[in-house]
Amino acid sequence: MQPDAARLAILGSYPPPYGGVSMHVMRLCPLLERRGIRVVAYNATSDVGDGRIIIPVYRHRGRWLLRYLFTAREPVIYILSDRLIVWLIGAMMASWRGKRVLLRLRNAALPDWIAQSRWRRWLAGVALRRMTAVVCVSRRLADAAATLGVEPRRIHQSAGFLPPTAEEVDAANLPQAFKEFAQCHEPLIVANGKVDWYQGQDLYGFDQLVSLAARLKPDYPNVGIAVSFWNHCEEDAAYLNRLIQRAEQEGVRDNLLFNTEGGFFVPVIARADLFVRPTRTDGDANSIREALHLKVPAVASDAVERPAGTILFRTGDVDDFEARVRSALSRERTSGAQECRPLSDEDSTRVDNYLSLLAAVADDRHEAPLHGAGDS
Image (tube, one colour):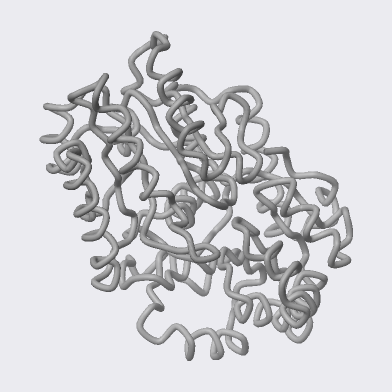
């Protein structure tokens, strides 16, 4: 299939790196193809692509985006970027070129703009009100879109989780460093993320993981906490080195693995005793839903709403974090979680509604389904 034959274009990313958006796109493309929707994904984060369905635009993405504003052939554009300039370009394509543009809201960017910046709030509102549909991964984001004047019928709430394939879960995808670490640590706790900051604090809570290891070690001397980085660069090394030095001082250096190789995270979750997500803010973390899908207990901060079944602790409270982790580790596991499982009825309905929305917009039937596209 040639890109100019596609009906729906995705502006986002594709693995590697293996972050939430890129994994969403990787899983979404074949699901849409199975529904007969010809799709092309423009990868703005790496040079990965097949030249047909996945087109890399990373090296000159700024110039490419401006050119795409005037040359886009696909009638439907689906934006999976949190960059305001991309939203505004999408709004221009909708207003000037008659494109049907959808936008997916996935993190705390929009609520923060609304609270902290009058100009970003105004520009975001200008962009969002021109979208055919705004897909929000949480109720908080749906409410934020509504405050900017987006019509309720254009706002859809649907978590970003799409089911992993059996190939993803396969042990062959496990990083070698994790395999070696897992062999000599029990219980095994896993987390993921990248070095990033939110209001001056460690966004993904890696600092809390060092504290957690030190608190658990007296009762669990072989405890292992393995952190998978979905993205890593040279600039991040200094902070990781500080964490490693602190772990050495706490006597838990051997109990922590910071795996910066990258790779699929699902097979790591599948072989863990517990998944933790101590983020200081969030969207709707796919990794939590992946853990629950694989029946691995998930402990997460209460920074934002979390899916049913998540064990919550007070954001930034290491005492509460430790207590919830200890409680989770003391529970007997219902089953080993090393295989993909059927989706729950709730998830099946949500995914079907989400795909139906995209398919309907791509098939020129976009007025019909604009009354709800699933709940998170």
